[in-house]
Image 1 (cartoon, helix red, strand yellow):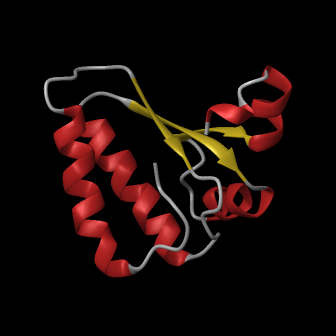
Image 2: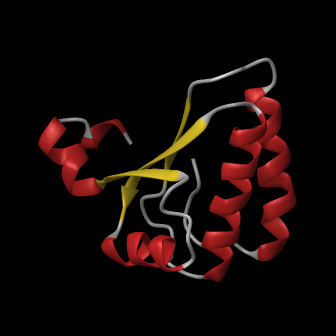
Length: 100
């Protein structure tokens, strides 16, 4: 889970924790809750690092709770093909919004 405002100094640790969590995994989906994450350059860099770590373990990244603004930024920078997104609205419709 990524919570709230990220700063660039958080990113190396985030990448290390992601890789450690995926150690021994070869395939699957890394689900990342991004509710409340700002749509900015630091968030995009964090998501790119998550995608890289997941890819190195043959996993995909699925974002949950992504906003329209964050989705637009993801598309703008070309990460749309590597980050599957499930919006907060889709989660509410599926009845899992309270799980976050």
